[in-house]
Amino acid sequence: MINPGKIICIIPARGKSKRLPGKNIIDFLGKPLLAHSILAAKQCVYIDDIFVTTDDDDIAEVAIFYGAKIVKRPEELSSDFATTAAAIRHALNNEQVSSLNPTAVLTLQPTNPLRPENLIGQCVEAFLNCKNDIDSLISVSINRHKIGKIKDNIFEPLTYKLGERSQDMIPSYYENGLIYITKTAIILNQNDLFGKKIKPFVVDSPFSDIDIDTKDDLDWAEFIGKKYNSKL
Image 1 (cartoon, rainbow, N blue to C red):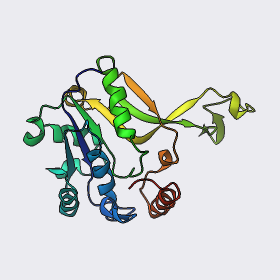
Image 2: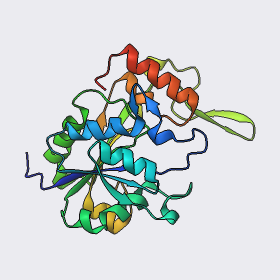
Image 3: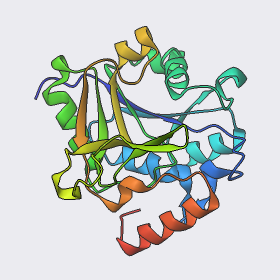
Image 4: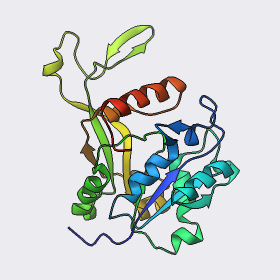
């Protein structure tokens, strides 16, 4: 494994969620939703520091309580149209973050609170083992559905041929949102979380489909978390 340099975790957590008010600090299995990602990052020995970028004072208070540092996000980077990459780039330009001179950033979305045990460490190791050859690493899961589109009110398959058996399909994968690891230079210079060379880390887990944006999502995530006895 190559020298990792400094790796920091940045968690984007803005306020003013419309579909699920107070989403990022809503109670999830006994802790604020945001807390699960902070605690997961704290368990990884490769992470040198943890920051939460937010525009919301209540979110900031929760983040500090659970051991993260705060980067205050400006209003223009807190709208529905602001990208995660822009928020992470802003955080990297913050003095307390830039002074660490991190070589890579682990981005964790608070809306994905369930992650397999040791996933973060495994992903960081995979990233470091080929760091010179890639720009980023993202977690993906295999798509087991027959995906198509509707054009001019006609269904057109995209990932398979009509009549094709599932077991004969060419495997396709989806970005599950559990893990993003990116070279700092890519984010700063390209305002991008991915770059051109993206290493996939395949995750086969019931947690891969969890992304909380509505009350129904929250209820389903709690059911899955309890069912599989995730360490929360």
